[in-house]
Amino acid sequence: MYSSEFCAVLARHPALKDFTSRVTDFLDKHLPEPLTEEAARPPWLGLRKSAAQAGLTGFDLACATVGPGDGRGPAGARDADVVVPPGLERVAQGMAMFLAGRRDCDAREIFSSGHGAMALRYGAPAVAQAVLDGVVNRGELAGVASSEPHSGSDLRGLRTVAVDHGDHLLLSGTKGLVSRVEEAVGFVVFCKVLRPEQAAGMDSDGAALREVPLSALWLPMDSVGVLAESAAPLGLRGWSLGRLHFDAVRVGKDRLLGAPGDGRRIFDAHFSGWRLMMAMVCLGAATASIEETMARTRRRSVGRMSLADIPSVACRLGTAAAEVQAATAWCFSLLERIEKDGEDIDVAACSAAKALATDTSYRAVDIALQLHGSDGYTRHTPMEKRLRDIRGLRIADGPNDTLYSVLAHSLLAATRPSPSLVAQRQA
Ligand SMILES: Cc1cc2nc3c(=O)[nH]c(=O)nc-3n(C[C@H](O)[C@H](O)[C@H](O)COP(=O)(O)OP(=O)(O)OC[C@H]3O[C@@H](n4cnc5c(N)ncnc54)[C@H](O)[C@@H]3O)c2cc1C
Image (tube, rainbow, N blue to C red):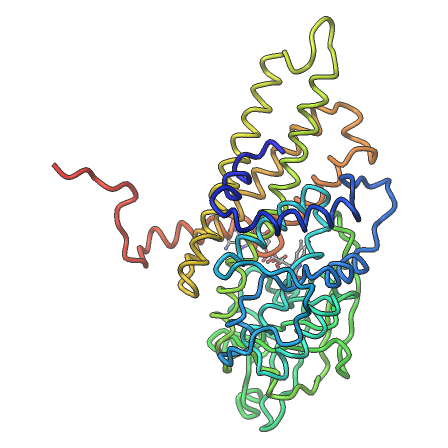
């Protein structure tokens, strides 16, 4: 693998060597080659279940973060579970995503607890245990439902409401487009919790709702009143995409994650890490594309020279490789900082790094497709699939334009105690 940045991370954290070998062995067994659109579609959910059996679905959970402060650890974790040294869980997850992306972007759901991590970290003990049993131990899938038809990028504009009736909430609204509507056993739903009299007084355009803080809850998909409706996406077709309708769904209050109003904090903490994971998937795919293209340009001759000997070809490949290396280094350095800083995450940097990494990966795969000629434009090579898949991840988990703006706003507002961008040498 040419990606020296990936190797550099491994050199910094040799304790992860065994972990990366276990992930690579799993991929070699189940997804030996990068996937093309014309190949048979792997049984993705079955692969996740196999990963659970191989102990590869819970390694991202620090024991102390399972359950809200009960320090219970992953009760029910099996002997076979792959153990990552404490403090390296996020880096390990990033490595697994990078390796998965080298085979296929849809392989992103195979490893780790995914969005189930929110229920495990912030859910009441019974919720955390149920998610641990299903999502980690049995390899089921958890989804996240934040976006709504009228408001995807704007969290304050969400209009799904959970009306508080004392011992339970009644959840109503529509989410979408969201991933995994057919496969997930449950969703972390972001919504606004209202008292009944507040709900009765809400205006129809949702203006007053903007002032209500966001909450999060765990919703099993078999709850009465949940309806899923699928849509056909351009890429990332290994997993379903669609809408979720909630028609006065009765939800126990013990399913709230954290306290009412904690939703934004949970969202930022989770998605800062998750965006970097999606970045890693794309960077893995881009790295594989560059390697495959290097090999092709050496084999392929044009006139009397190989493609690789044409300076403009080498320059384009070198540019792509440099950009991918730089983005990989930034994303891993942010994951290392998250491990150190805990909940004090640099949300703005993580947001922009996801945007940069997915844009960079898209450009790299586009060059790779070009240098594969007409072959690259068919379903016979992985390039066109990667291009469609990465295209989706430039919108999903926050559209890239919005994410760059988050960094700009943070720099402009100087919300953090800000040393100058470059430290000045003292005279
Ligand atoms: C493949 C895929 C999977 C997804 N999975 C999930 C999921 O599992 N769960 C979930 O909740 N959602 C999911 N989404 C939805 C996704 O989070 C939203 O599509 C995204 O947040 C954008 O919201 P929107 O579609 O409403 O676009 P809009 O909010 O209508 O924005 C449209 C475009 O306008 C631009 N734009 C918007 N706001 C700004 C701004 N402030 N600054 C600059 N430009 C801006 C961007 O280019 C943006 O793409 C998924 C989307 C895709 C494509």
